[in-house]
Image (cartoon, rainbow, N blue to C red):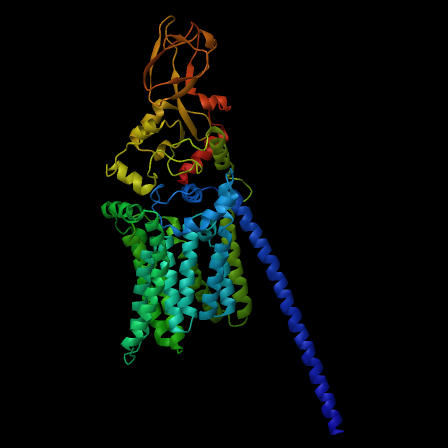
Amino acid sequence: MRGKKWIDRNGVVMHFSRARMSHLENSKAQRICWFSLLAILFVAVRVHCAAVYRVDSDEPQHLHVVWGVAKGLVQYRDIFDNHSPLFQLLFAPLFRVLGERADIVEAMRMAMIPLYFGCLACVYLICARLFSRQCGVWAALFTAFYPRFFCTSIEFRPDNLWALAWLLLLAVLVCVRRPAIRWLASGLLLGIGFSISMKTTVMALDLAAAGALTWFLCTSANTSVSLSQVAKSAALFITGLTVVPGLLLLHFAAKGALANLYYCLIRHNLVAASERAHFLDLRGVAVLAALAGVIWWCRRIARLDKDRPLATRRVFILLAGAIYPVILFILWPLVTREDFLALMPVVGLVVVPTLLAALEKLCQRHPQFAMAAVPACIILALVAIDIPTVQPWRDRTRFQQGFIASTLRLTDPGDLIMDAKGEMIYRDRSFYYVLEEMTRWMLQRERLVDDIPEQMIAHGVCVAARCPERYPRRTAQFMKENFIPVSFRLLVAGKILPPAPAGKPTLFHIAIPARYALAGASEPGAVLLDGKRYEGPLFLAPGPHSIQTPAGSGVVTLVWAQAIERGFTPLYKLSEEEESEASQARQDNIL
């Protein structure tokens, strides 16, 4: 009987064990199913946002450089860029596959989606390692919908890849246990960061300061480290640090572009940075005050947390997030919203664990409910902020698409153009420099010579982008006198010739040598151009010219002939919708 009972009891145990395992497997399968559905929905949302979110002026600038590299031009030597080269080199093959298309900005934005999810995965890994998996999930969701991160990460810019490199570096420092692998991988990732953006200088200083403060706060007096161990770690770190930058330097040396790289990447940026007056504003003072509070908090963590290695990692992440904006405000000459793209995920690593810990203490009766409901409400609030910013119901890219389509229709591949930041993307520029903030600042103070009109005349440039607020004053005046609008954002060489008294010629001056046609003349055959009957488009050399129209003729427009031949209308007037779009773009600083 005992044996039978034992067998029966054993059978019951086995039965319930199998039932429990089956339940766990079903539960796991359901979680995987729900996670997959949510992931597909989230990817669909990102794809839609990439297709409709407004185009920032930096995106065509980066795409123009990527186009040049894909075309076979050498970055820095043949095409100006004041950004590190790795991002452009990596995305040039994809650009070459996509080819010339009006929606190139939206198409290239799709490649930013994996970088976005890579950042979220890093946030989850770091938070799960330092706190818990539940905390990691909420931190990733908080970061995913954090308004500035959600919106800025949509755009095609190197900062997306740079943010991923930064978060991978933090993940390696926090999660990798073997010192040799940790130091080699961290050096490699920091070198990749330098190859993507020179803002990695701020990142390196941030990590050094955070490491030193962490050592001071968390290391006991009797802790000792051998010099051989330090030397080995430093050697591994430096080896990893030099790999990618070294390969890039060899690449540009082989192309004969090292001097150009030095000027564009270092000297051009440093000249403006050294001469720009830069002081801590109210934001910087607030950040300094917050840093003092974080250091006090980290000291408490170091004293109260019994798990010394875990406390050290937590303190390091807190300090890395708090010190970064201080260094940025003090050292960086031009602080923009994308400079904080790498910091925003760290905010989630700090805010979410703090919130969950507070909820666990405050809500003793139902801590699990509070720790799920409150973060969910915060995520929904962030989504509510994101929606009016992105405006997913409105396609705000169509004007940029129309601009690129008009450029491709108006010009041939060999035509030189003039724009501010490479916004025409597929055409070479007559002026070497890009008119971004640093260059404009130097032109205003005559650190660079504004010879844009001379370059346009020398190269016979007949097409320019319509953005007078970005051109230097002299260039803007030159374009006002020698160009006329033919679309929302396109100018072509031409002049408005006012009517003159009957029988008397009107004198005018041509700056851009090109073929010109007359538009608006009621009787073109009765018009005399330079004393000869006008019979169709003809070449006009630079210098003075005359035109004589019959009595009763209105205003006659002299316009680049290719624009007329390709269906463009001179003296294009903006519609109300285009005026609204242009006004909004100027407010957002994206024109």
